Length: 125
Image (cartoon, rainbow, N blue to C red):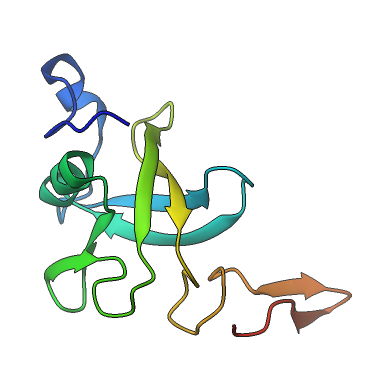
């Protein structure tokens, strides 16, 4: 991935942010297709992610940047950023180091609805 500071100017208006200036971002392991997590980004966190190659989200609870892996070491390196046809969701193809979930699981999507119940399909690492 070639570092850049933002979307090219001709595509700057492609993304649709909500009233809080946020857009959902789904992180997916670039080489396996495994869906890891969903978080929120704003224009500044997108710009930082594109510039540094390390994924940076916006924490709604802390009202601050959340640089994935800053405290845990479980960083996400950006492989490619995509967005959907409506421009209202971002897909981050990443190289995940360690677990992506704060529960210490590889993915935040570790519960499955099966046979009328909920099954935990992934243990903490």
